[in-house]
Image 1 (spheres, rainbow, N blue to C red):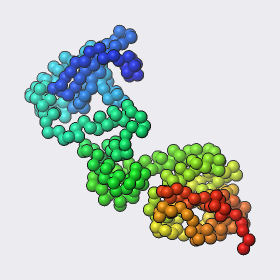
Image 2: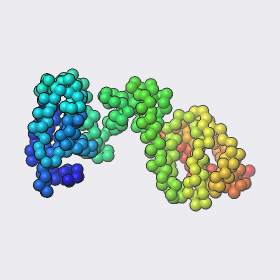
Image 3: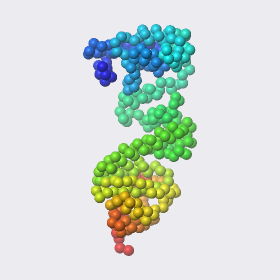
Image 4: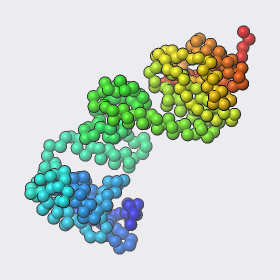
Length: 339
């Protein structure tokens, strides 16, 4: 019987509590006559014992599955008489077997912090709810489980949101900024960088299959994921083939908080090297005001003219910021004007 079948057919005909061990056992109905039991609760300290008794761990439902005989008596007998270690399955309570099952339960319950069991409850609530079911701080708290072991991550999540203002602000914060928050380390930095890269690649997949100009909303979403929250100005080039499908997205330069140098000769050279027929220029404004400056407009004109001389079209120049984006083409700034 599969896990899905157990889930679909389970009716909870009987439940045998083992409170002293932090466990409960539920019997489930079966259409093929095979008795199925699930063990849930604080199973981690007893994982070796449960495996020795024939249990199978279901990581999705977070239960141990037994088929055939009720494992309740065997668990009670082995746990109460065990002497600790892997033989008794109580490796997390080494040397406690002589206390008996009641003393073990009391030891497990004593001295736990207020957040004991909170991680599993939050995971369960997330898996059983809608995608929008958790507020931002709880979603961030959930993500931090993968980087911060054992401690309560709620205060960290709230501190991060208070410091950076939003989930996007947190994930795009620099390493130097993140280390201002207590309990953040290289594991946290790795997690957030992986999220940034993962999100950008998800959006980029569509851009490599369809013409960019026909997929404008996706392009903007991709660029915002890449650039909107950067604290220094960055200049990127999107190189397109004859069908306006993305060939390459390359960072050309990074500058100060309000200036990035652009060299038209380098832009032309790279376009020819990639055999690009067209391109889109992009840069971000860390000031969050996406309106073009006079230097932006003049630089665009110089690059456009240089590209035209070698037969490459400059479709647009985009400015990206957290408040939105600006298209030079939509503003009429890409047109040739008499000089």
